[in-house]
Image 1 (cartoon, rainbow, N blue to C red):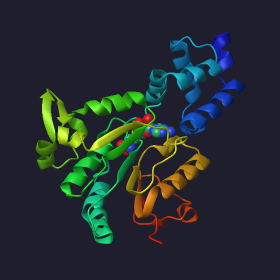
Image 2 (image 1 turned 135 degrees about the vertical axis):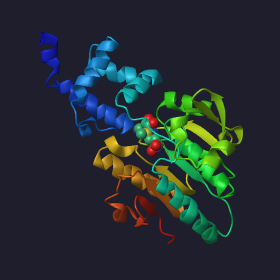
Image 3 (image 1 turned 45 degrees about the horizontal axis):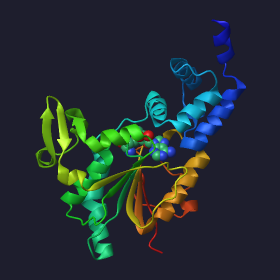
Image 4 (image 1 turned 120 degrees about the vertical axis):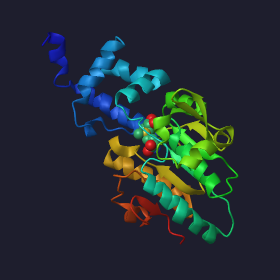
Length: 271
Ligand SMILES: C[S@@+](CC[C@H](N)C(=O)[O-])C[C@H]1O[C@@H](n2cnc3c(N)ncnc32)[C@H](O)[C@@H]1O
């Protein structure tokens, strides 16, 4: 091991400051990674010839492309259409129909928070079309990573990304583009509005009926998660739902004010 490597393994004190700043910027707790993430980060720094953690933080914070590479490197953009399909059929068959009954009219405001390359918000748009729900506003789709948002706007996907979609929906909502790729049709695209946003720092709109925040908080610290779930609570209308990822239980949901409405589904009470 060279002298320089010795200085990095174990991580130097500046790495702690870097970790703290990354958490403030993105919510991501680098300590939550099981492997020695600082080694990987160090490799990225070498690739960009960045000499210190401070310089690297500034690079990431001021340059969306570097932030994208950083997030990519942590491999946190993985997604697909109708991921964990049973949860989607629960929305289609129970939650949305019940919502019609409760609201007495068909109008629904949806948000995919941490939408990655677009599969989740487009799935929501398709579900809205299938359940004939009126969405006066397009589905809000937000992510911190400009690069994924750009890809999302193109709406082009490999066929393996849509294997959970019922066959008849594939023909209805996608067109073949080339070889192994499909593109979401314009009417689906028109139902989604992509927005660059940082869930940790940004102010949220309110009045949402359903918010999906799935597989986003896996690397967030406990306090960051709790603060985010409180913000979601306030962003929901009374009677609205928050759906989390298939392993993401909200342990303090009662303290926040949510009632449990099924696995990984939380409801803001109607009052
Ligand atoms: C694994 S993807 C989840 C995509 C989709 N929700 C799903 O479950 O398939 C996680 C996404 O969260 C985004 N993300 C991470 N931290 C974020 C933050 N602070 N604000 C907004 N988006 C964030 C990442 O950029 C990434 O695209």
